[in-house]
Image 1 (tube, one colour):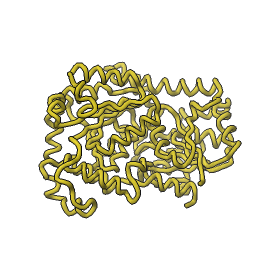
Image 2 (tube, one colour):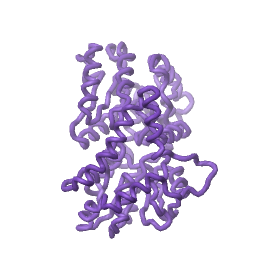
Image 3 (cartoon, helix red, strand yellow):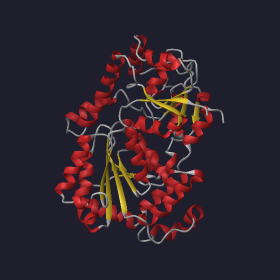
Image 4 (cartoon, helix red, strand yellow):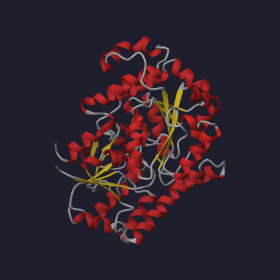
Length: 423
């Protein structure tokens, strides 16, 4: 079997989640936390990571948080797409990264990979830049994890670079061209989704959709208009789902927006107690986020319903967390999350309710979700029990689910495999 190195970074969940979907293509290596990493490199990565996580957490602080994040976001700002123009001039952040690499940042990692050269598939731009800077002999690929990107994702000298990009959508293709990346180095593959949620011939995905739609269209409003489409794509539906209406709320890697998860449980508490709805809170690998959710459940006297109508996804291992998360998605009807890389999971036929974006790249993801018809911004948290069920009874969320299922690209993982291995 042919192999590649899957390079990721443990900065938030996005890059690691992307690598997890690609794990069957080769060994996953965290560029900022591999065995034997020099202390100098580890410390540089820690500075990059801690700055991002701190800013993400303080974003919710009035005035001060917004000001701090605005300054930080200048480094990752996505410029306006129109008018189309040459955006190939390197950004300030790229100049910093190039200076760091000239001082040896990443040299050890690339030297270790050179001992047994394999194609590199990087889910973050910086390891790909390192591989090119230190003259890695094999192919270098970079997977884009957002619906639009800043100049930082493209190389310092894009026209002469040999890094090849896997784009999740057409906007990223066009954006990379504006940044100066050669057209022959850009492949429109779609985002790599977990194949365990799709299955051979997409049968797992279809079966999950059959069981999801009855919960999303309780009054049959969507089916009144689009039953022919549903029957053509899914066949007949069961009269009832095999699980209660289920919302999965996911926090970001820095634990941002955990308060929204608590607000959802508090507002829907009476329905949870009646067994009308289930809420799953995804705490990731942050023990303090898990404890925050546990305290919320205890305060609301929902302990006896834990696991049945309210649950928490938490694991100490990132891989075990992703496994549990992907498994939980199979019985998830609504995914409530900030518009991160999880926006692309709408292609699994799961409507996205988007919490406020953190950063201009997430603002781009939200625009893509809304324009595509796959998701919508959250409503006023004080009235969740009103607007959420209005959306359900009118079939709006069922429409988003089918739109994502029909139009969303689901086979990005296989397309990436075929390109890397020339299959």
